[in-house]
Length: 215
Length: 215
Ligand SMILES: Nc1ncnc2c1ncn2[C@@H]1O[C@H](COP(=O)(O)OP(=O)(O)OP(=O)(O)O)[C@@H](O)[C@H]1O
Ligand SMILES: [Mg+2]
Image 1 (cartoon, chains in turn cyan, yellow):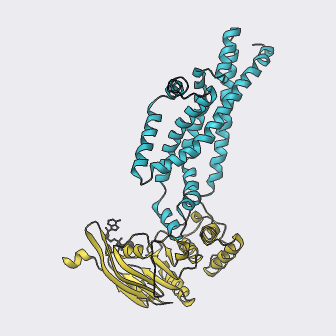
Image 2: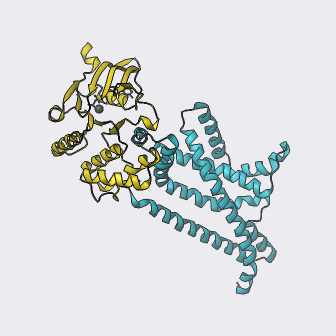
Image 3: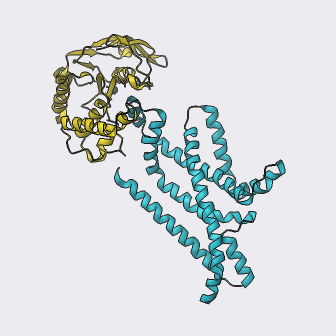
């Protein structure tokens, strides 16, 4: 493997990695808050709301993300809803990941002791004050490890956008490999994924440490 | 002065409290005693608005009030829970100042000054930056008291203040409650410990399990 060739293909790989990272970041920004809101609905006493959200979570977790991706990009235009490639990917990823996050947050919410709500209640904190100041900070600590797993999955799942023709990292590597008939680009792709996941793992570890100040 | 008239409460078709009447005069201590399952906690939860009474009148200084109201102006009753229900992710100081700043809209400075005063008073000077898990049971209880007092309640209620603590702390808790009485605090104390009740009570209310009366 010549170093010269490595430097030749790296720019196109980085370009692909850039798209992967953009999808990754925007998916998290959209799906984490949405997941929290859905989890509040899942634990709410309003039964119809709860049922609707349960069906949503069931659909999202019960069908392959790949199918959802194809459905949004190739399927929806048939009924007149057209997304651009990247937006289609974003919609599918956010809806899918929000469902997984919602389930994780639901578990976290249910493990918060009833006494915490009562403590807040007699101090006359409002519902949202209680959620924001008492519940969410404690839930975050509980869910970080599970959220971390999903975040790492997301890095790898992002390669599924290949199917709707988006130029992500994997596609960049694949294109170079078939053009130049060499394994080098695919090996580099693997290295870049490892690097991205390494960074994620490190950041998650730091976040975990930040919440280690109490038990 | 707190007056409760003809308080009734059932769970399903099982009556727990049937026509409870009592008065706590300003600066006095009323203890509520009775065997396990008699409904002491239920009574306290009705008075503090954590459980809704089926019927009954609640008067503070002769004026009716609704224990379940979530209005900040209605913070007439402070609660010290059996398990304290401190917020584990907040420091001692933050536990105390959270509601005064968020609900009573005190400035951080004012709330901190009040909190420091309360900590001093309750023998917790210098403990403001610790977290609940770093405190002994007795210290946690005093933080819970400080947290309730910071909302400037007219009455302070306790559920079994001795039960989560080492038995030889019983006298200390009694002294603490009597100390607050000296400062003019009106207090309502639920306990099944007769001796402890006699040690602190100006008046005593005995509740009995309704099932056992019928039998
Ligand atoms: N949420 C509830 N739903 C149904 N029954 C309840 C509920 N809470 C309490 N009870 C019942 O009401 C009765 C009184 O309970 P409560 O906790 O008030 O007793 P207590 O006097 O505080 O007892 P202890 O001294 O053991 O704390 C019990 O028989 C209990 O089973
Ligand atoms: Mg009880």
